[in-house]
Length: 96
Image (cartoon, rainbow, N blue to C red):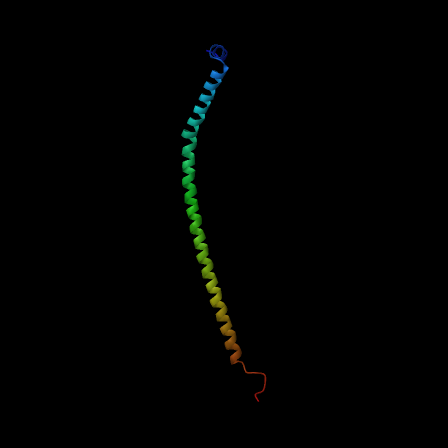
């Protein structure tokens, strides 16, 4: 049967409702069979990437702390070397 005879027999609203029902069924079937598995796989990959980013962030925080400690200790060592250098150097001023 063609569409014109269906409209003449049942009326336009009934045929349009049937067409919309088929369209909704087709979109639902397409979404559940093709899109849902891809989204599930993408979600798994996204979770793995988020975990890796968190691990890298923690590593960067630890590395930054280590660099700060090394810089602080090196600064103290340089200050101690300067103090030792100036205390060993004879004074230019005569002692009274």
